[in-house]
Image (cartoon, rainbow, N blue to C red; front, side):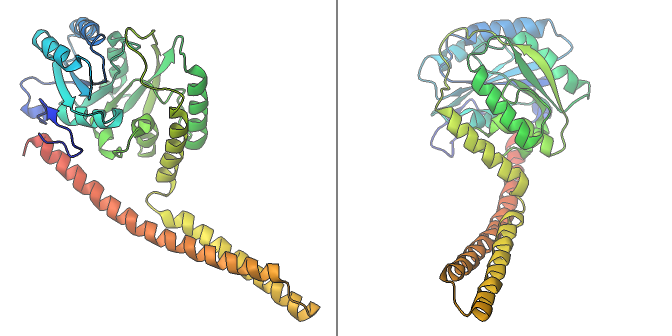
Amino acid sequence: MADDRGGTLTSFTPRRATDAVRAVDVSVLVPAKDEAENLPLFMQLAAETFAATPDIEFEVVVIDDGSVDDTWAVLQQLRTRHPFLRPVRHRAKRGIADALRTGYLSSTGPVLVFYPADLQFKPEDIPRLVAPILRDEADMVTGFKEGKYEKAFVSGIYNRLSRTLFHVPVKDLNSVKAYRREIMDGLPVRPDWHRYMIVIAAAQGFTVKEIPVPLYPRHAGKSKFGLSRIPVGVLDMLSVWFELRFGKKPLLLFGMLGAGLFLLGFITGIVAILYRVIGGVGYRPLLTLVETCLLLGSVFFATGLLGEQIAGQRAEVRELRRQLDELKIRGE
């Protein structure tokens, strides 16, 4: 299948759960970038966990996100030993958000789990994550990291800022997650926005639950994230906040700003006239302020009207994308 971003997806055949050979209850989505050393142990632990949980049928969709090591070759070998494994490949790196989207389209289960391949989270905790969803106690379950975490300070700041902006009652937004399949339908396809899946799901009315999940040292390889991600994360946070507050009605923000500036310009104009009439002198700074307020007010108002048109187009595109995804899943 040709990829619309210049890559190719190998072994990617979207299908419905009703078309599968076996019914799957849970699909575990595992983005993997240069994880050849970790995947054999990950699959071994997953196989042991699934064997100990016979009442739940699992599949594991591993998305090789443009790896330059032997990840894809290792996946082909593991595929022969583990029938629950379904490897998918991006020819070029596209990021976790795109990897999760590809995994979603490749999977069949009504419940999805986002799990990294680095073994900082062990597969043995997957059944605990999905249990509240399968019991209809929650629509999404996120794990709260327990254990030594080298980026704990940065993560703590990020989570506090997120709770302040979004008022989501969870301790850790950026961790392993289990969620109903329909949550992916409302998630914008934007780089790194998977970090705000909980926020977006909660804003759409889905219920969220948090459970503690042990965090272990990375088994092999090195982390793909550094301090350079902090500014990007803050900007993404503001972008998500704006999307949730004003994405559908941008005129509410820009129109209010424009109206406020118009009002300030009007009041300033009245003051300038009184200076002229009563005092008999003009005051140039007031005139400059009036002109500035009217000009900026017009710009903000025009921006709001333009934003409304863009929001309408985005709604149409979102609906078309949903319909296309349904056709892909049906294999039509």
